[in-house]
Length: 95
Image 1: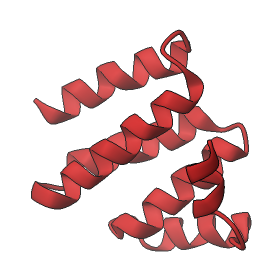
Image 2 (image 1 turned 180 degrees about the vertical axis):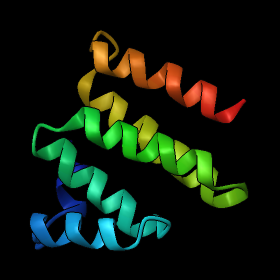
Image 3 (image 1 turned 60 degrees about the vertical axis):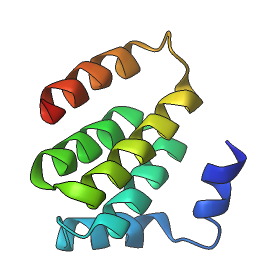
Image 4 (image 1 turned 90 degrees about the horizontal axis):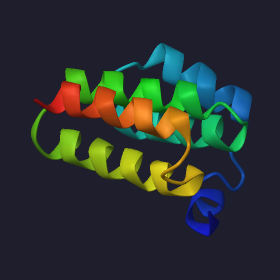
């Protein structure tokens, strides 16, 4: 949780989401938007954002996104139904 909070220090949530909408394939922008969404109680949206990005990327970028998404899953915990659903979607996107 602390790492997530550090990543969004000084970030304007509205700007982060607007930037993400304008730059759908910019990995750093999308990761930041997902962090903002998780902290705003919109974890479902964050997971979908990153799973969709995994589908559109390859190589190192894809791996970076996958790891980021897994780190967000740990915040919610394994029993969260949204995490279970997003894990299935991620597996589908990867294979």
